[in-house]
Amino acid sequence: MSQPTTDQQAATRGIRGVVPVLAFAGITVAVMQTLLVPVIKDLPELLGTSPSNATWVMTSTLLAGAVATPIMGRLGDLYGKRRMLLASLAIMVLGSLIAGFTSELLVMIVGRALQGFAMGAIPLGIGLMRDELPREKLGSAMALMSSSIGVGGGLALPLAALVAQHTNWHTLFFGSAGLGVVAILLTLVFVPESKVKAEGTFDVFGALGLSAGLILLLLPITKGSDWGWGSTTTLGLLGSAVVVLVLWGVMELRVKAPLVNLRTTARREVLLTNLASMMVGVAFYAISLVLPQLLQLPSATGYGLGQSMVVAGLCVAPLGLTMMLTAPLYARLSAKYGPKTTLILGMLIIAVGYGAGLGLMSAAWQTIVVSIVVGAGIGLAYSSLPALIVGAVDPSETGAANGLNTLMRSIGTSVSSAVIGMVLANTSQDFGSVALPTMHGFRVSFLIATAAVAGGLVFAVFLPKGRPAAQPQLRATSEEDAALERATEALAPSTAGPSARP
Image 1 (cartoon, rainbow, N blue to C red):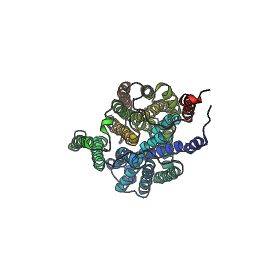
Image 2: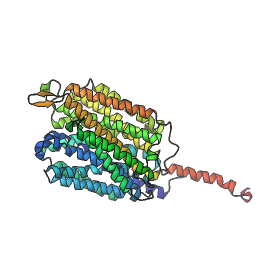
Image 3: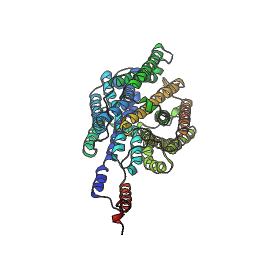
Image 4: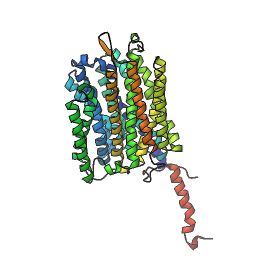
């Protein structure tokens, strides 16, 4: 049996650092989503503004992340994924420093928007893994990178709560900047630039059109509960979003090198995967919004668990940890049954978790159980998504395609934030002089998440069976190289001609 060559062994050693470094970068930028959740109720006082204005500190991050993912993915396809990954991390560091040195609302919003723009690192990391890793390592690696969105968001809750409770809240931003610098240095040392690049130029007008459409769409979704869902502002922005996105789509179909290849996006496997991604995004953010509030509500309400900020964060932390631990399990299941099956299994587990959560809200340990079950399901579902996308698109479109997939998850989280926020606000009751969410509101929120998962299951079931016909061009394994050598040797006698025979 042929042994791996020295070059193959060197290549294997060279890629060992790629997976942990890219996963660390993904987790770092994902932390920005929930960085301020532990102090969200204190933001009006900290920034000297109204509660409605303070929500822009969170909204700006979601909007910037949604805009960045397809744009940075396409830029990575054209000009180098590693280069754009470094740019994303540098933007995050800049935003963290801006936010760290201010208590002014407008400046804080700018800093938080720059932090959110770094979400483009997720699809870039997935693209780098596809281009650089051997096939036998790709499944678990992409699963870990895809899950980093939830892992970072989940781990940020207890860590941010601990920091905010014992130090100045600006320390959260300085810590974020430090993580970004570490991620940049590790990327420079361990991550090579991809040699797979797309042809053409960057679609500037496509980027501007998509950005405008997304802002017009997500702005009323995230602020509709404040403005009123039937208000002129909300309805006007939603109508404008439809017009802009339709015009953008018509323009993209006529461009030779579009920002988003809508013909590829319209393929059955890509379209259904993206729709399922949005539903998983709804399910993920629902538990992140409900459980911390339930845990911190005073026990005098009769259903609140009266826990501190730190304890509440620790109870929700298993959500992110379980997502991270499911990546190796996903690789084994997907290798045997395929990513479609693991996506369906993940969604079924999420549904079980939310169903159990309807009756498991009376003690802190019960919220931990719910976090573990839902985290396992979301981990499997998130891990399946990049494999489905990568298997359906050309290698030169990996960054843009995964960017769009990440965008769909972001839209799901934005919709979840708006809808569940509206439910909790409309079902709140006054306790003393403060309006607090009710148990009924929490249960309705879990039912909404369950309904979203049911919709995602329908999309997943109708995905094509097996792998798509257009196989991704992945690096071969050393075992496959050895097999090719043996096949060549076996064919040699028959191709050498009569003189080679005894």
